[in-house]
Length: 344
Image 1: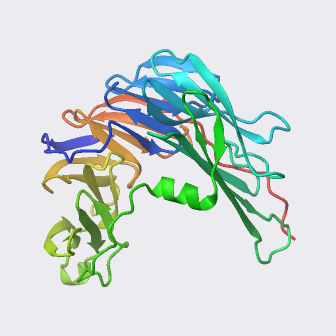
Image 2: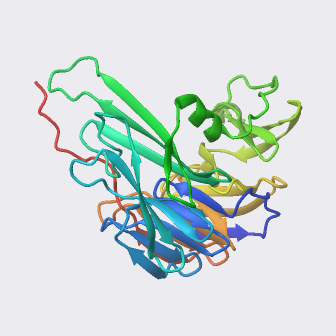
Image 3: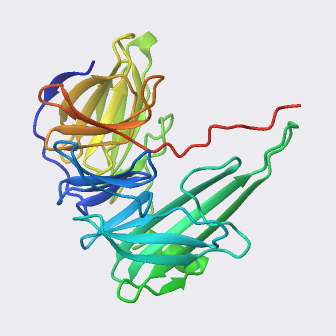
């Protein structure tokens, strides 16, 4: 049972765009007040952020990738024997198919699939820019053997640029793809003091580098959020995160920092949300899951809930003002769950 302890409207950091990928297979469009997700039946659902209501559903593709200009780029499952990655453009208002585009992949390599297979996993991403729709992918193959021993790992990757006026596809060389994926070259990380013993390498967000330094319960030291200015590495005052820290993450829209603690066993995890714009704590809520992909829209916490014996993996919408769950939607599980060859 979720219990909301506090919510105050934060001064949110500005994001570069109103659209973002919350997690693989879930794309958010804040301006349209909706998100697009992989449904368990193999299609795509458009869901209203406020209500969780189904706006439309499409079986033409299975995985949302990116939103732009009232279009949703999505990945479809390749048909038997195909050597191309199928990309489908859907109308965001109706789910109607606008066009289908076959993106060639490496000769002799099966195209990326949405579901993982035994020993094989794939990742496909897309981003629209002034040159067109950039699509890039990786395929990782791991040898499966009943005999214990070293694992042979093979990685394949590729990228292509789709002209959104003609739907023509240009395969990109690896250096071209890397330059486009990175976009404008970011400034190198300055020398940061006090990084010894931090929980994770400093991450850049909203003009800062941030990390967490664990405390010590035996001497009453709480975990602290450490911050440095990105332009010169100047340290900023630490922010105490309290006892029982177990995890942290940044919201999918890059506006909130999440600190998760487990200081009261048996009562769920305490999520503490801080506005990155001013680093004030704006919400606290207890949930059964530790840190997971999330964002907040108009005081509604939307997060990925892990599967249980009773329920599959889901998205949940929780009203932070009342502590009540507003909606829940099942997600397609793309992980491979067996069978595997028996061990010898």
